[in-house]
Length: 201
Image (cartoon, rainbow, N blue to C red):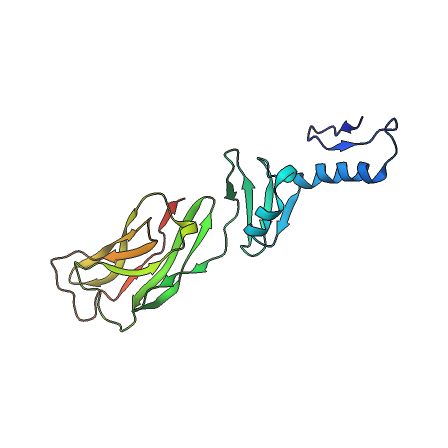
């Protein structure tokens, strides 16, 4: 009858009274140790394909996803939660919008999504006040359960210093609107910022 390690991690090892079977002995030890290590997978899909049946994930497991460049931990509720910031990924901008500065993008950090960068209209035109400008789309994998709203910076014009950015949780569309009722100056309201915006998944 194998014994368990002294650290209480249920890693079993053979004793002298066990029937000699080196394959079974090593397999038992390896299968006990590997789940305690940081397991590496090509991506989340590869992890899902590998961790099934008798090797299903257990709370406390930690994995590293190569494609996502991210460590994740298995929670008691059965979810995988990022333990390290994922890489910045570019926003998918709508037709008519382009990068102003700061590499507009998003990343997942410990169960939250962070946004960055500034966007502009491709023709360098103004963001007309009182108009909903849908400028980008986020993928379904990083959408919150409900709509999100933020007060965000815009290029100054006619006393307007801010806009409202909205994330549609159903479609992933990001929209900005500058307050109605004012006429922007010739050089104003030509970009909108995302730096510092974040929401919980």
